[in-house]
Length: 325
Length: 267
Image 1 (cartoon, chains in turn orange, yellow):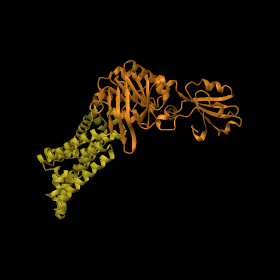
Image 2 (spheres, chains in turn blue, brown; image 1 turned 60 degrees about the vertical axis):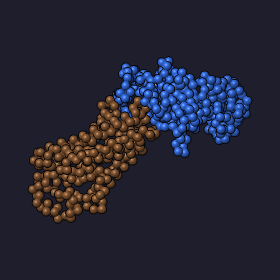
Image 3 (cartoon, one colour; image 1 turned 180 degrees about the vertical axis):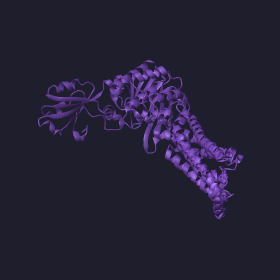
Image 4 (cartoon, helix red, strand yellow; image 1 turned 90 degrees about the vertical axis):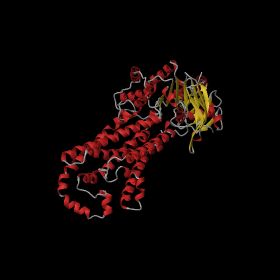
């Protein structure tokens, strides 16, 4: 089967600034593919090359088996696009905006557009100038989905959406996959990608770090836990506990009282061993958060990114000394 | 009006067009309303004008040095300076918004992700520019033709039409400079500045060429030379004038397509 997206040594340079470098990417058809990376990693640059908005410096890209430069019109006919930086015509209403875009496209079913508006709870009667960021995002999603394209290219689709709408968006993405459409979405948060994607590619500083099945990734998920204890607990207590890759002491939080102490644990994979170890102490509060993508990269692929390597199990550090002592 | 980018541009510019047209009609009406009293004191005025240095007279009143005839009056008071400013300013405004404006507003990225080729978009925007500048021309023509008829000054609707048509073509040529610059740079201010700069330079060249013998041969480089300079009314429609103005515009339009097709669209 033809790849939905195929790039070969794709490079885009902007003067001294780096865009993307030798990017080889293959997105199989009918999948939900996450394109992950911190802001400025080159995600939008890649997407804009695919749509022929910008031209690669070197390398080659094809979409749906068609050449990105030569057959761009045919590609755009079969693609729905949500830009990361989204702008509409402020003086048009939502209805007028959708009518204009539907006219440019042709063959859009009115009923389906109304259906999308209802599902995303979008009030199309209001002028774009009066819409909130989240509502503009909804309008962007509707125009991307409205012609049931073979390929959806969505640049940061959920930024600014409230949780209920996000949930409906995930539904739309799953429906698209069931209908055989390919979804290519960029994101800078891993949990979102894990939730909807079948596969994810990680990019950083314009280069591809890894491509993974989401299923395989789950077992290696990285989590950060911050625990406050009733009594001082040394970081060393967690050395060697299975899954704990780093422990940081939050020494400076005097306001909690002299007797307490706070530790931040970075845990990879199962939390089981760390939780059982924690249970030996008197725990006052515990919060768990998803680490930012940069930390995930360091933990998963530090060795491939020209760094010293992933934090060695049991590494201990002070807050201001950073993660890796 | 949301069928394509041509119609949408007309829709976006409707209010702007109306404002300019009302201004044109009002100015022409006022100008012609005072003409009868001007022509009564004709003798004294013309005497004053005849005493001006020949070069100055030629530059601002044309070779005939005629101010008090209807044709001379309309040329001096309207067509020598105000009409070109109105036509060109309007054309530059519309042309600047057409491509560079959409790019600066950020709507171009989404528009060009639709199955609309860049060439088609340029042609639709140019077609809208042509329609809008022609509408300003129509406002000039109709208001002048009606006003001169009411005041009873025999200028001739055909002669007015010829002058207005030349201005329309001149404005389209200058507007195409702005369109091409905007398409090449993505900057509306660059397009406006280059268009306005070219217009001012060409106007000065043409005026200078009328009073300075050394500059005289270079008047052919100014588009104002082909639009009738300072005395458009009564010039008539010459094939060479129309050809030069139209060909300049078409060359700039072709350049716009080429420059726009090669460029990276900015976020």
